[in-house]
Amino acid sequence: MRNSIIKFSTLAFLIFLNACKTEKSNTKENDSSIEESPYLGQKPPGLISKAFAPGIVTTGGWEYYGGFTPDLKEFYFLREVGETKENKKMEFVVIQNKDNQWQESVISPRVGTPFISPDGKIMHLGRRYKERKKNGDWSEIKKLDAPFDSLPIMRLTASSKGTYFFDEFKRDFTGDIRYSRFVDGKYEEPKLLNKKINTGKSFHPFIAPDESYLIFDSKRDNGYGDADIYISFRAENGDWDTPINLGDKINTEASEQCASVSPDGKYLFFNRNIGSDNYENVDIFWVSTEVIEKLRPKQ
Image (cartoon, rainbow, N blue to C red):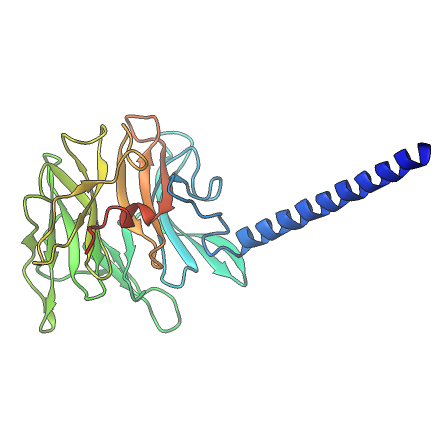
């Protein structure tokens, strides 16, 4: 009887030891997959949005906009630094993958709301922009010519065709979204989108590279509180359908703004105001673009 107990105990110990090894091996595999993730080493989200890169990008302060270059090796965002109101300032920051290591650099004070064109060659900054040089660096800031130079643009995004979609800030805090196509070597006079889009306050547009949908934020009667994120799909006749609220998995009673989709089309990035009317704590969130596909009209 004693020998049977010893044999059983030994067998149980070996099973336990093997289970520990398996768990440890699985943990290493999971860690490895996280380290190899192109998104600053972060584990990607599913259909529930979560803060992006806590402690690296997202903190208890103000971080705004988040966007990758097409190769997913550079992540640009804005943040506020400083302990007191007197010394607070906004910075333009990039985190780059160099030799398989993510390295942070402060580019400059805030110069606009950055958006990288689908081909990675232009960094739009509202009415201004930078061009990617052959050595990989960005040029000095340049200004857009007419017909954009006199418009109060906050955010300008571009499709793969080069069509611009941008907002127009007004003193009464209402906004309109316009577009301008590149035709015969120049940009057309900007045109307003339809009233389905430009109702109430409509800001921070993001146009899909193929122009199949437009995402923007707006404060509307059917929303969840403050500004919510909406999506409008392009109809077969080329017009824009009635905007759809992205729902309570994305929008809250607080303000959600400035959404964009990662260059690989997999994740939606956006901003959320966290528990403060004065926007002292604004975080960058991300979620799977399955939330978009679930809303896309069936062909």
